[in-house]
Amino acid sequence: MALITTKQLSKSFKGTEAVKGIDLHIKEGVCTALLGPNGAGKSTTLNMLTGLMKPTSGSIAFDERYSGDRRQYIGYLPQYPKFYGWMTGEEYLVYAGQLGSLSKEDAKARAEELLKLVGLIDDRKKRIQGYSGGMKQRLGIAQALVHKPKLVILDEPVSALDPKGRREVLELMDKLKETTSILFSTHVLHDAEEICEEIFIINHGELIVSGDLQTLKKKYQQPTIYIETEEPIEDWSRTIKDSDWIRHMKVNKNELTISVTDIENARNALLTNEELRKLKIVNFEIVKTSLEDLFMEVTKA
Ligand SMILES: Nc1ncnc2c1ncn2[C@@H]1O[C@H](COP(=O)(O)OP(=O)(O)O)[C@@H](O)[C@H]1O
Ligand SMILES: [Mg+2]
Image (cartoon, rainbow, N blue to C red; front, side, top):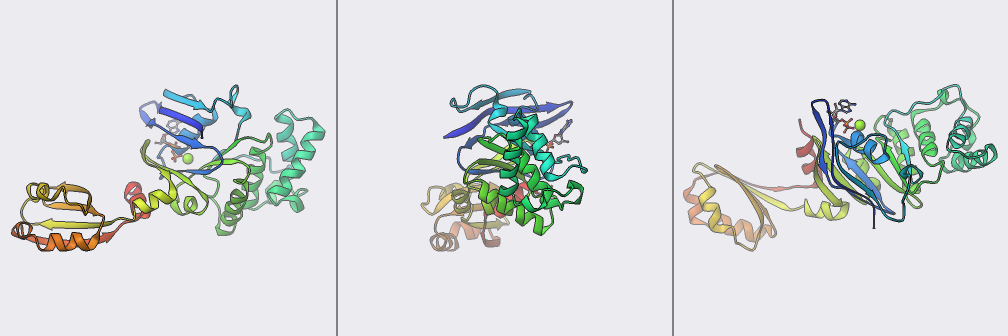
C-alpha cells in the first residue's frame, strides 16, 4: 500500500534543477531511506513531500484514506532543527503541542508520553542548550510526533551525530517504526541498511535505484566478469549475448563487463572461446559487486 506516490516530481531553483522527475512510492508501515550524496536533492524532495516547498512540476498523491491537509498526517524534522536553548525539553514539547492546537493540559500529557518514548524523561527539566547532539535529535523526533502523524519525515537525522548519538537515534527510529511509517534521508548506506526495508538512491536529482533493500542487495551481489582486449570486442560480444549464463552485458570499445548468473559456466565458456582469444585478452577479472559498490559508483564525484 503506497502512502505517497509521486510522479515526475521536479524542482528547479534559478538555474539549478535540484530534482528531476522522480517517481516515488512510499509504503505504509515500513521504514524508507532516501539515500544520496550531498547536493543529490534529498532535502528538496522531502520539503516538497511535507508541503513546505511547491514542486516546479509533477505530482504528489496521498493514499485516498488520507485526504485533506497533508500536514495532519506528516511529522517533520528538518536537517538543521532550531531549538530555543533556554527552554527545557519538556517546555519545548508542550509549546510544540500547543502550536499543534492541543490544549495546555493535553499538550502536557502528550509531552510526557513523548519524553518517555524518546528516552528523555529524566532530562525533561534540563535546558536544551545542555543536551547532547543525540538528545537534541531525539527531542526533534518527539516534536515531529506531537500530533501522532502516520508518517514521520526525518532529514538526515543521524548525519551530524557522534557514534553514541547516532546509535541512540537509530535505536529510537527502530522502535518508532513499529507504530509509525518513517521516511528519512541519509548519505550513508549503512544507516539505511540498519533499519530500512525500502530504499531510494538519488543522485544529481535523479532516481538511480529503488525498491526493497533485501532484493536490491541480492540483485547487486551478482558476480561480474570484466574483460579487456587489445582488439575491439563489440562485434564478438554479440556472438555470446544469448548465452544462458549472462544476466546482462555492457560493452565499450575494448572493454566488456558481463554480469553473470553462474560464474563457473561463464569462466569456462569465455576462457575456451577461440574467437575471444584472437582479440588478445589483456585483462580478465572476476569481481563481486554489492549494493555498496553501486552506491560508491553513484556517489563518487
Ligand atoms: N533554496 C535553494 N536555492 C537554490 N538552490 C538550491 C536551494 N536548495 C537547494 N538548492 C540546490 O539544489 C541541489 C539539491 O540540494 P538539496 O536538496 O539540499 O540536496 P541534499 O539534501 O541531497 O544535500 C543542490 O545543488 C543545492 O545547491
Ligand atoms: Mg539535505
